[in-house]
Amino acid sequence: MTERLSSPLHSRALTSELMFEQYAVPSLAYCVDSVMSFYHNNIPSPPIPFTSDGLVVSFNSASTSVIPLLNGKGIMSHAKRIPWGATQATEFLLKLVQLKYPTFPTRVTTAQTSWMLQNFCEFAIDYPALLRELKDPLKLRASERIVQFPFILPVIEEKTEEELARIAERKKEQGRKLQEIAAKSRMEKLVQKESDLQHLLSLRERREEESKKDWAATLQEEGFENDAALDGAIKKLESNLKRARKKEADGEDMEDEPPSFPLIDVPDADLDEDGLKEKKKQRLLRAGYEARERARKEKEREREEREAEERKEEEERDRDLAGWATKLRKEHDAIINKIKDRNRRKAALTDRKSAASQARMKSIANLAADERVPKKRRKNGGEDMFGADDADWQIYRKINTTAPSSDEEDDYANLQTVEQKLLAYDPTFTAEHTHASLSSQRSALMQAFRPEYAEGDVEGKTRIHLNVERWRVPEAWFQPSMAGVDSAGLGEVIQTVLARFTDTEKGRLVKNVFVTGGPSQIPNLLPRLNATLRPILPPEMPLDIVRAADPVLDAWRGMADFARTDELKRVGVTKAEYEEWGGERIKRWWGGNWNASVPI
Image (cartoon, rainbow, N blue to C red; front, side, top):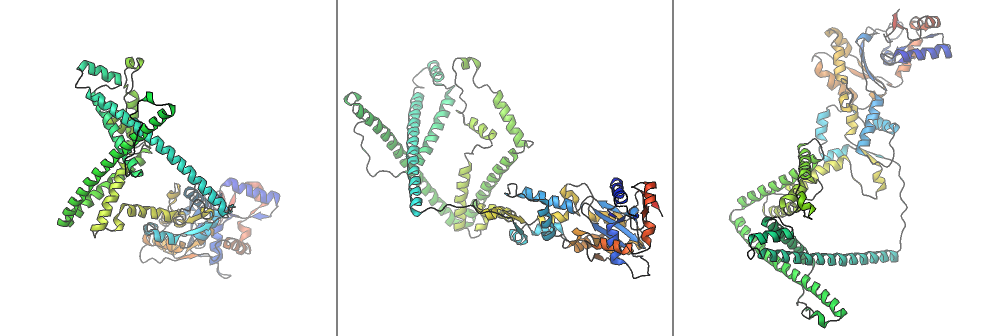
């Protein structure tokens, strides 16, 4: 029976009990499978005894062993084993696939990842150099292997052209109604803001007419603490109105002739109920028309200012193109750095231990402890004036990670304008230097690592793209820490084993490095072992690495060869010895374990 290197005694005892008690075998010999594979591949023709030297590297299901043999005898006291094998590699690949595709529609099993490991994975001769090479998205895409899982195409109900036209007309009608409702709502809000602004402006005009005491009482009555709060509210309202007028002017064309509102000046007493309703409607329409007129004039003024700036910039460009381009390049870099800083801050806020996140929590705590309205005023109906000061909104944006930044849209708009100018006039600035191109380079790497498919692409959604994982999983044999295993790698273990021998014995061992086991069939293992062992050996020392003729079945063939020799009776445990020693005790010999063994 085979057992792995340093097999637990409990497992051996159970196997011995099963063989002697259940199957009534006359004798039982335990051997290490990799040593038997080495024996089969190096056995001499009879009657020459087995005296081969070599270093056996066995890749097993749950471990990997390194066993030195001198003069045909395994030196188990110098053998080493690491807790990494095909089972752990399969589970590691499964975890990587699950992390890469957290919402994969089909359940991926260990049997499937085992098949991927056997067919698609390979060892990298120089893993860091390979990673640097795969940073190129084209090379990463060229190295990938695609695993297509079964899928079922959804049944799509086909509709006639009449039904499609009817649905499109219905959607168009719904969209038109929503636009009318939104336009009416915007107009009402615009009129209300106009009214509020007129009220606040008229209130500020009374400041010069009233005494300080009366003015303070008026401010308290209107809900303002001081003049600064009133000025801040007016400034904010003017800014909102300017933005709203601009949107309204951009969305509608101005009328060729001003509309008439005949009922505005008619007294209410001279109108009936329908006339009053029409007068109210005309008042609303006139307010909207006047707001659009103001927005149009504001837009014309901005256009004139923009044209003047463009003429000035054109003169500067004609006078000194290099200086103009350098100035715009600096402005371009400054805007990009500002966008990067904003993105970094957003990313830092997701980590509760970061400085930005702790500053945010401190701001929240300060706001919670800040009593803006005294208790007496709160009882008397006092109003909290949070928001009247622009600094309040900066605090709000600072503590609220999802709040849109007022400068973000302006930054992107300015960046686009600067890039268009540089593309048009600076020959050294190409499309590759734009922010979109730089961002797409990073996203191209991510797209190559894990391609995205359209929402309705069922076939694409059930694909697994293996690229970096093809080399990362086998690399865990040489760097188990990559997979979270606290163990030395295979190269370090082999170096430790060889260090316990003299240079002469070491030369005999490395002259026949024998690799066996199912995982040893993964491509590029022999070149990787050669690249690992050659630097730790003297230059003049020959190194030869061979793989078993059949890494999977040669252990059985070696056992069959050994069973035909007379030595089997000498190393086997008989039924009487089993009853005397127990199931854990075995005989020590050149092909078996030494733990709980009795010298022959």
